[in-house]
Image 1 (cartoon, rainbow, N blue to C red):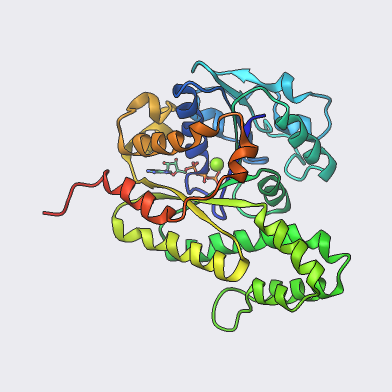
Image 2 (image 1 turned 30 degrees about the vertical axis):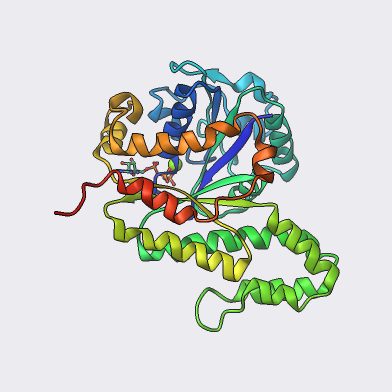
Amino acid sequence: MPLVLSVGGGKGGIGKTVITANLGMVMARLGHSALIIDADLGGSDLHNLLALDNSEPGLGELLTGRGHELSGLIKPVREPRLYFVPGDACLPNAANPKFQRKRKLFRDISRLSQDFVLLDLGAGSSLTVTDFFLSTPFTLLVMTPEQAAELNAFNFYKNMVYRLLTPLSRESRGLAAALALFRERSRGPGSQAMLSLLASLDGDTEKQARALLAGIRPKLVLNRLRSIDEFIQARQVQAWADEDLGLNVEIMAFLPEDEVVRESARSGTPALDLDPRAPFCRALTLLGLKLAPHAGKGKQWLEAAESKDSFTRAATEFAAFFPAPQ
Ligand SMILES: Nc1ncnc2c1ncn2[C@@H]1O[C@H](COP(=O)(O)OP(=O)(O)OP(=O)(O)O)[C@@H](O)[C@H]1O
Ligand SMILES: [Mg+2]
């Protein structure tokens, strides 16, 4: 069973596609088979980073019921052990597939033979993006170090929690009322934490809701960092998600701003091919090394204890990419 990871984020242009493409290559170079799926329906562009054209049928055809099987869409890439499923090749209406088709997609993904499956999602927290995120136990939320990005990332998680708990609220009027309240309020003074709303519910519903929340393991990646003081944004999102949503967010990696990424976009050559020793590539390789022991066994990772102080671990790793102050 592959370890399935989706890569998303509230905003456009923050590096989701760059990270998915290069992380797939890292996993392949570490000796694992990896499949990258361009799941940015309506905005597929991952093929550019793998120097491929966009003429093959892809996920859009599958999700709009045009008769393809997932296995028939998988194409090998020049990199050994790396495979690719293109996006939607500009199909109309591909961005809002039916729920049943999305469900079948994830059933099919769980039966693939690759060690890792990485899904590059579109920006924002539309229903499709949120459903894709909730269908994969491991989710990498990408954010950049800007103040607006904190709230954006928090709202992404909030949407996720809302979508996760909504089916349960059909059975519980208390939860329905709590969710309605929760939806109205944004983060900030006067906001009511999800956990305190849950506490006011009937015991059974609260237990079920907490079990659902415990089943998602959000991971955070802060991208385009220029200095150590920018770490703080990740810590803020981690604290809010914990206090307000009861989510245990693990900080997986801090990735530096790096010219090699821009050069890669300009030249259509993967960053890892341009310069595997560039800081961005080395930081992604470290992330790949953390994932590698879980190759093909997503379930066990889900059950494994989370790193207690992921912030310090990621910060220590990142510090190695910056020279010591004079
Ligand atoms: N670490 C980085 N260093 C330098 N530039 C970066 C870095 N990460 C991303 N970029 C730049 O940001 C641009 C957008 O990245 P990317 O396409 O991966 O974003 P995205 O989040 O997938 O956007 P969209 O939501 O539109 O799909 C890239 O072309 C690249 O130039
Ligand atoms: Mg993208």
